[in-house]
Image 1 (cartoon, rainbow, N blue to C red):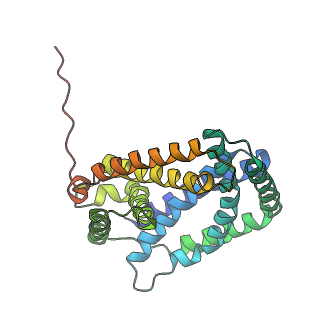
Image 2: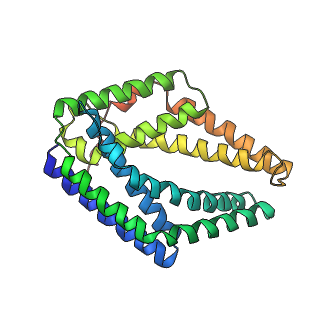
Length: 263
């Protein structure tokens, strides 16, 4: 990946992040906060890849001021998502009101720091752009191959615990970077399949969060809600088990779709 290509990508994502951050502070729309956080994830993915090619990596470390904003925004998003999960399972309890209060309080604190957010973004962007370097085709190919091999090893010994969520994070890094790295990779990368796997893991993880929130009795949930979530968990585990068989082979095999014949 050429240095100038990386710089243009960073600047494009950064402009989008700033726009969504300003919009959230002004309007409080959750989609804006979601898009801001997605932008942070995309940039961090690129910096992880770029650092992997350096003898003295430091780009991800320089990104820490932005990650502080990301984590602060995460408090708002978590409370919002908890409320959405509650709505999905029919909750109407003190827990829901507590999450609403957390979200409102966190939003006030986040917005109060808006000037600090802008300063951190500006300084970090300058620091990153000065130090970003090109990444060779050979390194890109080795990085993707090694990451896929590591993920395959984990999925071959499938455990439904935090290690599965770690696999999803690794997959997301590869997917986020594929926009830039794809044209230069010297191995096949089945983007559609890999995206399907990460989404299936995400669905399982979301269900686990719901189980933790609503199946412990702390939120006043009914047995019916807990049982429904457990049944859904069993279905998602079965789906993932089938989907991730021969992961390495499926992840690196891309077949051309047949061209429809016109009569």
